[in-house]
Amino acid sequence: MLELDHVTLVHNPGTITEVTALRDLSLRVPRGQMVTIVGTNGAGKSSLVRSVAGEERPSRGRVLFDGDDVTRTPDHRRAGRVARVFDDPHAGTLPELSIEDNLALALARGRRRRLRFALTAARRAEMRERLAVLGLGLEDRLGDPVSLLSAGQRQSLTLVMAGLRDPEVLLLDEHLAALDPGTQRTVLGLTVDLVERVGCTAIMVTHNMEHALELGDRLLVMSRGRIITDVSGAEKRAMTVPALIDRITGAGDVVSDRSVLGDGPARPVRVPAGVAGGPPPAADGPREAAA
Ligand SMILES: Nc1ncnc2c1ncn2[C@@H]1O[C@H](COP(=O)(O)OP(=O)(O)O)[C@@H](O)[C@H]1O
Ligand SMILES: [Mg+2]
Image 1: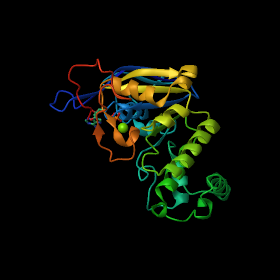
Image 2: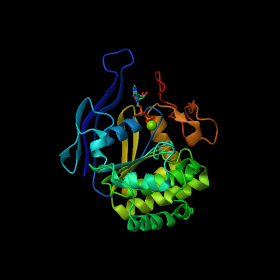
Image 3: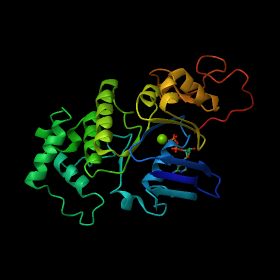
Image 4: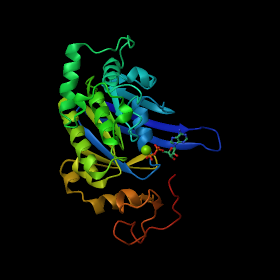
């Protein structure tokens, strides 16, 4: 069970730039559950992910893994239990190192003797097998520097690396955002396979409403540091894209047009009141734009 217990996260407290990214947020995710999270920019999705990873320390509240209070455990000491895939395909791998060295480092993650990371012949064969499953031909390029790989190949490799240590929690923060639709499908398939094989808890932040609805057991909508919708089972299956957009925009936030309204630039736009996907016409009062 992954637990956030009344977590509040304030950035730059006491300064003019103070921002409350998470507000008294509580969440319990049973082991093996896959949760998708949607919400407008600035809703607090990445703050939630970073709090679970240990990159941010909550101002108040607790984070627990299977009952262990890890609130004060720094991210590098959670690395054996948590794996992450970032939105930036460059963030998860070391570009100058070869595919093989990246895999070896991932295997050593969270272990004390990190310097001994060369692969044995048996390990190398195992890594070849894991890469062959991707169908990208990476198993024949173990010596190539990662800088030669495309964005989709890098995210696929990062996923393989994430799965090497059988993480308890897999954190995916918009990890498909930089990929073209075809590659998104491939990497999405790999993601689902990984979660099923490892049986880990997974939290996937996405701007893609279809992915949010189609994947996972549970869907959260975040707004202004809170979870405003939490659906699973039949309720989740009955949810439609317009209904989901309604939930998001009904909270009075802005919607990224790239994510919901087509392929334009990633510029925040407001869905007009009363139109499909917009807030109800009765909604009134000033609405502050999210960052
Ligand atoms: N390191 C930081 N310093 C100051 N403010 C931050 C920092 N990280 C996030 N924020 C602010 O916290 C709020 C939530 O951000 P974030 O969790 O990144 O949202 P999301 O991932 O949903 O877009 C935003 O208002 C954002 O500007
Ligand atoms: Mg984010």
